[in-house]
Length: 335
Image (cartoon, rainbow, N blue to C red; front, side, top):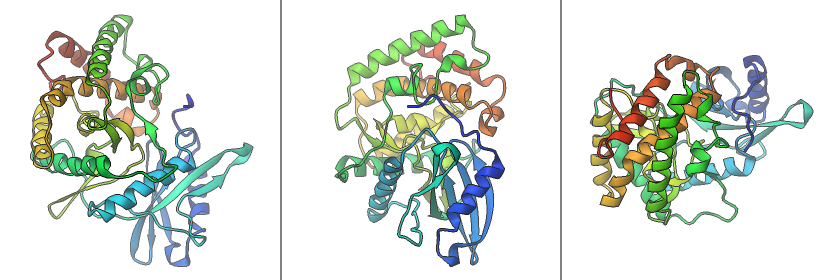
């Protein structure tokens, strides 16, 4: 995994690449292009023929073409199972993953999706909405456990080293602004406990498999009582209950976070059972995710998302680590 963490191309260059990708699609899909957001990738809204589409322009140094094609294969299988997820379109050559050349031999990949209607919830959402999220996550996990992956299928690995080690996919949490060496001690202690608990928990097929890995509020759409899941860009191999930790990404310190977790678990239990061993490892997974996100904030400091978190966010990570170490029975969430 490259140490590069953010696409340094400016918006003008990204828009030109998106226009280049769009020209490869049939004429009815040619239309107005507008940059919607930048995070790991750049996402554009395409308006053509009275309809909207989403064009995802991948950053470099993250997923190769085979990884993106594997993501789309899982989406195909999920739709066939009746789970509402994005659908990619093919270009004039029948290709779904575009490869766009850049100077110096680099490339960027792009995928055009049908638009999915819905409203994105925020931290003011009724906690009971997390029951819907828990239910649909359980359905994803049931499908993952039963689905036979096609030959050549390849997705990113989300284990303890790849999430929170200095060589992790999102960089080193120690680089986060506001952390002191004294803070390092409690985070290191929390990581040692997490590592021990996850080693004890293990990675058998009932506990570790293909997951969304980023099922948070910004990747949900609520539409006419239905919870729809978008943005499978980070899907990969990890602990199934990591999807619970991801559900409250960036807002683990929110006063309502514990209620969100409780409702997610209640919704999940409507579809699939969570054992005592699973429940016992939930605090470790929640804390691991928060530290993983601290690494993301450090390596993506120039993004709008990281800058919107405010100066106290990293301090809350340290506080939650203290809670995790002081009282193992408490969830490391909340005010």
